Image (cartoon, rainbow, N blue to C red):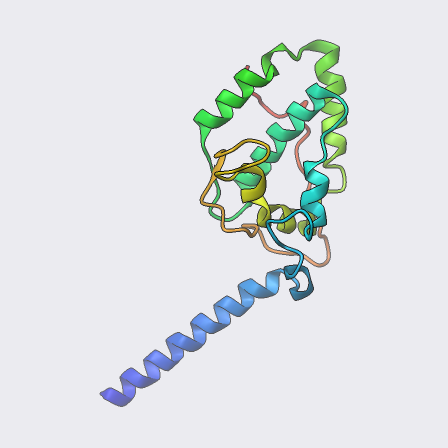
Length: 171
């Protein structure tokens, strides 16, 4: 009986180790050293922190970034109260008509070549942008584990994101 228990525990450990290795294999190991919460070492994070010259486009870009983090980063949850407060104080509801279309075009341009590597690095920097001391919207994202919740596809690393102009938004 003890031998059978030992065999079962060995199998469970081996399966657990294999599962962890499979998850770790989703992200190439040479990316991991730059997947930090520091823009000095995470180029993708530093690029995401650069403000757009158009204030309205910047509001829409931050809104879209928050949605990407909330839906594509493992364990991430959006605090809707914080998000709604940002939308009210930022002037989001005042962006209408041609002004909205122009701002949406500029903000969407930032996500034109969005791929898994970008997502992985941005998920790693989620606390820097949206965590407790977030530099864009503090406390918007909670529980992020710093990795994407989707698998890496080497044959097609690009991720299609919906356009800001066609996605439903609160008004």
